[in-house]
Length: 270
Image (cartoon, rainbow, N blue to C red; front, side, top):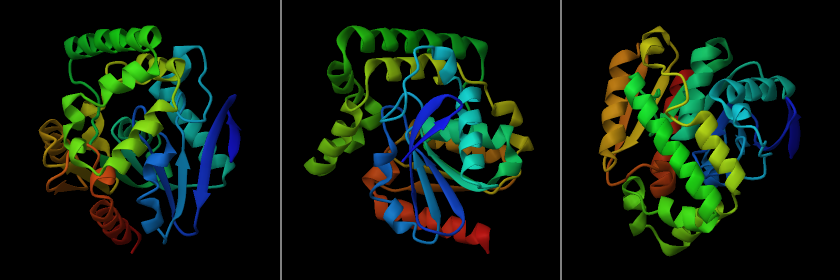
């Protein structure tokens, strides 16, 4: 189904009944990324969404419409229109940055937070500037070379190396999902809400008292380290590291991922 949210046409899907659970995909993804896990979340009202610039949601021309604050405001309005006062939010990678931003800005609207391979942003001005420059170069590459060349480049970065051993049908499924995007949406997403552009939430983590699950794959050493640092700052967090997987646990080991998430949510809703 589609909903116009603050002037942007969003593609969303709702399945099931129970406590609301909002799922947020990563960069180059769409709500299709959750298809192998959401069937396990039978106790919940599962809301999936194509984030701005991705999938079948609009791709506005102005990158400032993609900022983290704007994106979170869209999701707040979406929940309001769905008559949902509070929801658990699960976000993967970029979607995790959106989920954490939502929880920091609107903690009273969140029952629980699940961050899969994600971060609170960058700690220093120097890191932010370097990342902004890198993301601008990547955005230019997308515009100049097109989606196919970008996807070829993106799926071969070290972050996704562990996915090379997945069955061919899953690899092809992920590739097709990425190829459905368009240059403007991805480039503006990088420029508007890339890791270098978003606020750094590191100084505010200790103020967040929501039940929070941090999931990382043991092969993804960078995000295992980030997850440990987040865990040290939070007052009500649980850290899970999954064996033999990398960045996208929900793709690489969907059953294990679902079991961890469901167990955590059951403990929250008891």
